[in-house]
Amino acid sequence: MRNKINIRSIFYTITLLLYSAQWISAQNLEISHGPYLQYVTSNEVTIGWSTSKNTISWVEYYVEDGSNFYQKEREKIFDASDGLKNISLLHSVTLKNLKPGTKYAYRIYSQEVKEDRSFGKTVATRVYKREPLYFTTQPLKKDQISVVVLSDMHENTAKVGSLLKGVEWDKTDFVLLDGDFVDSFESESDLYGGVLDTCVNIFAQKKPLVIVRGNHETRGIKAHELKKYFHFPEDKYYYTYKIGNTFFIILDSGEDKADSDIEYNGFADFDAYRSEQAKWLSEVVKSDEFKNAEHKIAFMHIPPYDDNRGQEWHGDLEVRLKFVPILNKAGIDLMVSGHTHHFSFQTPKSEENNFPILVADHKTRYNLLIDKTGIKIKGIDIDSKEVLNMFIEKYK
Ligand SMILES: [Fe+2]
Image 1 (tube, protein in one colour):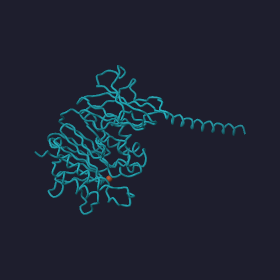
Image 2 (cartoon, rainbow, N blue to C red; image 1 turned 30 degrees about the vertical axis):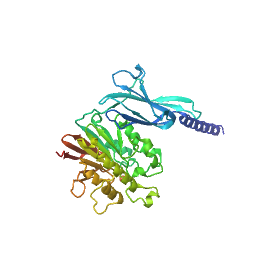
Image 3 (tube, rainbow, N blue to C red; image 1 turned 90 degrees about the vertical axis):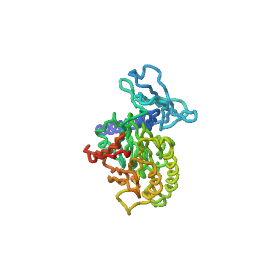
Image 4 (cartoon, protein in one colour; image 1 turned 135 degrees about the vertical axis):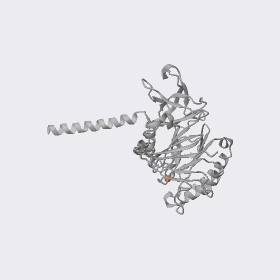
């Protein structure tokens, strides 16, 4: 009997301790995800992260000069809109007016805001006895640009880890997820546990992450909220990004089936969206900034052409009809797509695409090396084996 009582009391004690531990951790303020860098140009950077409780948040930063973070008061930029500091679980701070080609040290801070609007604890990335985080702005002129492309990762973190082995981070300008990094956006764990935390652990605290929306990011009950988690320069999933003399166009190909398809439950309106985007694209290619760029590269999840002639779906035909005629007149050097999970390379054809299209598969990392001679493309598989090595010569 005595033994039974002891066992029972030990059981109750352990249960109580477990509940207390859970309660304490639920009470703790912590940086739950990030920080991750986005949109690093010659004069700005955006830093995103999330916290376990509602906070106001800010970034402190300085030009790396070998000094310690604690040496003096550092410049602070708050996550704020319309004159008020944002109170949120998700945080985004854009640092502007930075110097080109300069290494900066940064640190993120979040201070709890309780329900009665009083302040609680503050958390920050650690700099005590350890290096702060760094980013480097792009120089105004750049001879070589190196981009890493992953497509259709579908929340497979182990694969992301394997594919990013051996990347020379010092030489890499950004990593681009060419769509379908989530399978269906049902909860935050699909995004963070899916791919984003892995990107943060491997590179995104020091190198920017560029997001292309794929058709799978448009699915799930949180699909409408994807924008809250990433920085899109004009608050649109289609945008441009310029480094040195290279101009990147990021397009959103939308869903792959007709809007009325049963799979979309009546929520899809992509035909009108692609038409609106085509209007925007035709203005982009008229701009001096675009025309004067030396290299012009487009990213779009669904390829307008692939090895599937006669078997196209509605999305393929839409992007072919609405975007390709504009791009054909614009002197595009390369388009990089994904979606099919199969590698193919579409050479320029006079009646179709007059620019090359690389269709990335889902088990290869593609390294693009862009310089004045052209674009070198390397494909590296999950065993770090080179499976593709090709060169697109710059048309003079
Ligand atoms: Fe897809």
